[in-house]
View (cartoon, chains in turn yellow, green):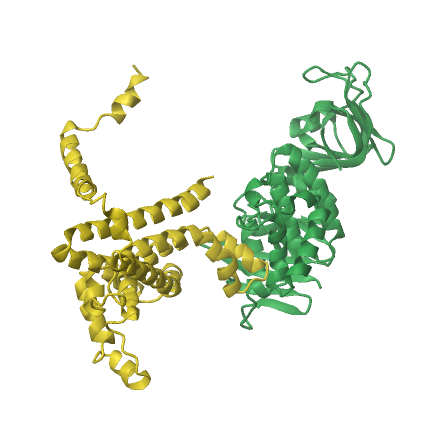
Length: 270
Length: 366
């Protein structure tokens, strides 16, 4: 009797939950399945080699990677400040950092235009002093993606910093390491898994970015037309092409996630 | 380069008020129960926790002076800290852990590597240079941690329970090793421990810390002779001898305690021989608590144990027991009850027999 008790407890889910759970799963899986079912498998290899697809894919991967780099350079320090400092208004700053998470991306794009557009708050000086116009350039794609994706990185890295064992930093200080050395040689290596996880989330979010990008950077093939934008436009004129591009996007995301999971999460568990 | 420290440190509601002085080459052991504030004192000396008041100076260098507004941050103090939980950097190899402090203080990579290799050899783990801390045993990790703290040549070495995380066997071996390293060390050394044996083996002087106050200080012998109270007596109550194991001689059909047949003999410098339960070879420490010493008026029967004539030199009451200092070969402290003192008529000058079972003797390789 005592032996069966734990098993009974484990399988003691109320039956009422099974049905909605199954429906929820179906809801998540079905659309992806439909994509696979309707994919033009026979013409796929040819379509993949079309210049439009290749161009959009190259631009997407490039801009998502650059956006991730921007997020790493700016986001890790932000995470460090959020995790380690104490000043009045810190909670406010943390709330602000997460705004892009809840903001509709289109609104983000509009906000970027108002800030960095040719007549924007900052953009007008960029134009007047340096002759730099950001909107509708590849740089705008990178900025739009970074704006939307940065919170993913900041939250992941902040969590890693908070969870980190600070005793190692103390030990480093007693060995004569300056704060900067401690950060570089102890803190960063110890939170590296968190940074990688954050960067992966950040990259995949940037890769799929649509709303802010099309608003701030527009749709110029080869310059600002990323895969998600190409998918949206192809849906009107070339549904098969849209499906192909969607499959490419899914494949890239899955490959990256699986590769990094195996490399980092597996490595940590060992 | 004497350490001169007057500390007042707060940790929540707890406050430690401590005055310490350690000469170069000297080892001071701060002994006390858990929660007495031992680690608090070390952290304050290293600059990891702020002083509430006081002053810390190493020779002419003032590290901390609340009144004068001087505070040297931990990374600029010439202090080496061996943590109880070793705190080796998990992402660096043993060699890189040792090189860390040298690199942080500006030494070039190749030179730091070379010094690290020397230290690995000195602490006896040369073959583990490339191994990460996760794969080191606790004893190996503590050796590397010791080398890491010593490599930058600190003027003050702080040891926080350096042996407490180890199992008994490793502990005995490392205690000897630590004694050697600390003996070679030229700076001031402060070790905190709750283990009287560690303190007696390592230290030139002992300070007993209780509830944030030093209640007694002096040479190990002096503190053991006149423990301030029962608690200190228990804390430092240990008869400790250094001698040489002369092998696993079967001692006259020795059946001691739980039927141990055979045993070993440790010969002390004055020729006195102590019978121990297990065969020993080479230099060794023998230790037993004063509570293990039985005092008799005449030679007790059933002789396969350590039994020798002695003279009562002193009686020091503390708590419910009385510590008796016995002069003889060897000298020893015995804790007896007040009733026993009356019954045996113990008084200074009185001739008695002291007896200790072989199984009560702890033996450590030295």
